[in-house]
Image: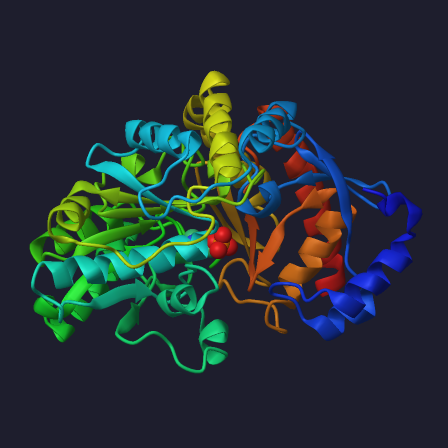
Length: 457
Ligand code: PLP
């Protein structure tokens, strides 16, 4: 690219004039200008001013194998030369989505053997919603179409994704959600646990909010429960250990399908290929995207359990659903090589046995004691830091999420990319991080917290 011929200011002006960004206040963007990332290598990204920033978010929860992998560029180049595109509609296929589907069936929970491709997590969740409702219709129960989700859930930005999600601000701009989706309390112990309540009991109470919603609607009217194993974009809200077994029991008891959204947790982040395996779940659908290609190509895969797949095949007829880029040959070829790298380099074992536990310990020992930190938590290589003004009472700073934004801005200035969600700092590093990278991140975060505390007090 020839961006080098442009100054930062020129790029920012053109960006502000013509580019509408996702989740951005555009007036703000015009005033402040975008930070423009130009290149990246390993765990670092670099901006136009040459700043090297440790990427604590793996792009946007996706670059699990880190940046600068020539192998993936080579695979994409070769596939583009051989066959850049052909569709997978109307009984056509191309080799790479076929071989990727076989690989996904091999690594998925054992009840999951089919895959439906898209280009994004949002598309995959649209597919999942259509598919579970279609399943019950094929089973002769079209009224069994209600979906139970949670407040604070994030399932994407399309109309179906937003409707499935539980983000209040997003619903406020929806002007008509997909009907028949209910949202119950999330398993967010830090704010919702009652005085004297154990984590275990809170986890059961949060799961039983799902059962209450099922009973209220009547189980004969409820198609599925959808959840992220640990809510990501909602603030890395990691449920107590009692939560998922209870959800599993409730879904089975009421014959409600289990839809797991693993767009963030899929492909190694929690120390297994899928969090479902870590949690001992056999979901009916697993939504995946992001780290399927480590973000090198846009691709999503809705993994479909045998129960739904059998009905779709045996009773289905044509499923009137698909995207031009379902099974895109280049994206699928890149995904295959990405999964091979994850395996070859033992990245999942590393998270499970080494960096995951070390990350949890480092957050706890180096950050949790800080004067403006109320709690740290993690799940594999995803983490959260709660920002508070009073540690004992967990009182927040005034100004909504301004305190967390201050921490984030100081962190970026210290060479540490992390995100602020409400009052929570979130982290989702590439799986290539080592103990040394975790130490480096903690050093930078401590400096950012110190500086933010001076500003805020
Ligand atoms: N589901 C979850 C859990 C996500 O975190 C995201 C994106 O962050 C999505 C769905 C939507 O994915 P996409 O942005 O690729 O549409």
